[in-house]
Amino acid sequence: MKRYLPLFTTFAFIALLLLGICFGEVHAVWSKAVTVCLSCMGIG
Amino acid sequence: MERMRRKSQYLFTLLANAYWLFPWKSPIYQGPVKKICFPGLNCHSCPAATMSCPLGALQNLLAALRPGIQMGQLHIGAYVLGSLGLIGSVAGRMPCGWICPFGLLQEWLFLLPVPKISFWRPLKRGPHLFLIVFVVLLPLLVADLSGYGSIWFCKYVCPAGTLEAGIPLLSLDQDLRSAAGRLFAFKLLILILLLTWCVFTSRAFCRAICPLGAVYGLFNRLSWLRLRFHPDRCVQCRACLTVCPTGVSFYNGLDDINSGSCIRCLRCLSICPANAVSLQFSPIRRDISNAPVTDGN
Image 1 (tube, helix red, strand yellow):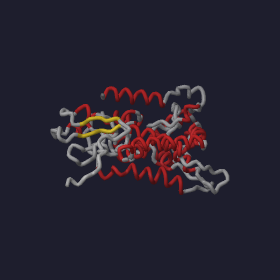
Image 2 (cartoon, chains in turn brown, red):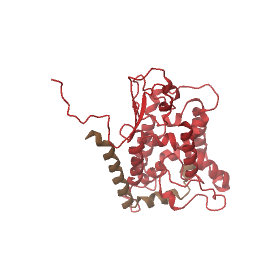
Image 3 (cartoon, helix red, strand yellow):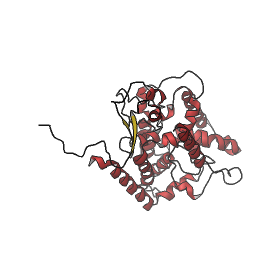
Image 4 (cartoon, helix red, strand yellow):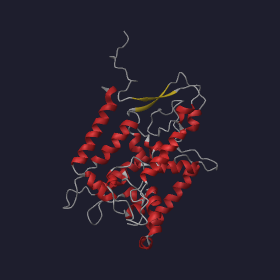
């Protein structure tokens, strides 16, 4: 089974990625990324 | 190989920062490509950034993960972790060596002809510490007066944010400039100190601080892309260690060739005169035998 660990890991993370997409996380990521982040700049 | 890697670094740096309309249109890009997490460290508040930063995105999701608050979200960061895990499980830490714009900047700085200082090895646990404390625990557990968490790594540490977002946006906007105070001065100091360190020590930020590299490093031993060391061919010339930007010392057994520190720049593969290093790309590990274990009796 250890031989297939890389393959299983990839499938597991694809599943996690799809889960995130289904739960609307893409929009949550986008909405934060399109506003100027004052904290990132060292202001907020 | 090195020339190809450099071209890849330039290409991805340009792709990640391809929005050059910011002086005339909105101060930052707001299009659909920003839904994608860029695999390297590139602040999404940079005026030219086209994609989102996975570290910033993860911290934002964890900081807003407040089930007790009416407006709190229940996003656990699956999209970001899935994106990072997918890339990591295929290529390991290769994005650090081939894609990351901040890695490219560090390599430029290290080219400056000054005496070099070797990296203090105990600091190599730093990225894991920053990942666990600043990226996960603090945003998740510490709440401000509004009840939400904060993006601790971006706010107090990230030099990419200061360099790519802070300096350009403050240069362009008078109001932002007047709002800059002690925190900006503190972040600017961190940026200057880190960049100075990178002049003397190869990839100092990647090796001592970068939480993104720590995430990818976790996959180095089980990714599809793996390096293999053949000790029987090694002539102990130390050429691999001399060219390694993160000081992975595998020729003498001190480190694993697929250690989490390796950024997969593949310089060791190119320079080895005895072909003691090879590259393997397979979803199935061929270096583990499938045969049943016997005791030899």
